[in-house]
Image (tube, rainbow, N blue to C red):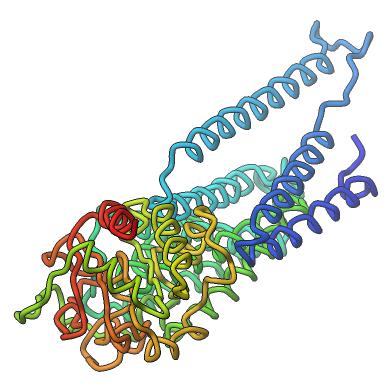
Length: 502
């Protein structure tokens, strides 16, 4: 069969696929064009997969002659290749079925942990490919069989391929174990509060230096022990890096792991001599890194500190912790909220994870439409980390057909709260907590928040006064004189407000 790299049609197909991926990223940069971006991504992936399968379809004919020892080796090889292709197609079919079922059943509230789970699979795939290439490098075309003067022949892996292999297995293992921790935290199996290990910085630095040393040793000697030590240490440091990162920084972690998975895929693309994997991995890795950096700046976090495993976090008490402020608070009803908002000139709605849990976005849009019909200006304020993954609230509001020109990011709308009659907060806690600006011992200190407390009236929809935000910190806004607490399921409360508006 003609070598894939020498086939210009294959190169052209991979180039078209890469262009589709670039268009997909461009489309996904805005909720308005996200569907078009998804279509480009699906087209690009379909082209890449079909091209890869087509260039590896067995082409060896069955020879009429040439049997040796009573065996037709050409026919045997053809049957083996056909069986391998069947296994590949079966795996694709099983994976596609699982993907379709998962996508149809998954709730929007579970999207962050689903993304973390996907990242873990990408990381593990990179690890398995690297291990397969290490165990049989000749089959991957990355080694030459060397026959020494004394001893048995062995496969000498090319020096560049050793670097690609060790990078792929290290980044993939870190991505897998880190994504598992992120999944457990997002899914509630682990607490959202940072878990500070004693001397964690020294441990992380020591493990990182050991990975570098044994990676260098593997490049020099191709020693199997070095390879497996790097695999084990990389799995370990993935856990160690993500455990000390608190819930408030989880959206950055999800974005960062997305970047890691891309770089792991790119490294394996070099090992497999697959241009599409290299392009796709580089796009995912670079875009994820840029997004993580932008989010860190938006949250006033150090990018290096976050990727180093919460290096800037304090190991002492977390300020407010889960303790509640023992102060009086005012309780309101749906009728009170409907009256206040119908008399307002401007209402800013602040959605959060509680809205996602209650699936209240559709009835929330209905409430906004009714207020606009009465002459009220309605705007939606989105915090960069509202929810538990980047863009979570934007996707939910887009799903409910909220007009894009009514949705504003934090930096564009924060100055308007002081001139706003009503701030309607539905299921958001940490992103509206003034402790981020005043309490230096708080785990969310330094994170920009929405200044909802500056509005004339704050309507805060919350299930009960007993809960705290994902970062485990109580919110002082609950107890302010201009705040009215609406304690109920978010969807039920908004439905009652809509009825009261009628």
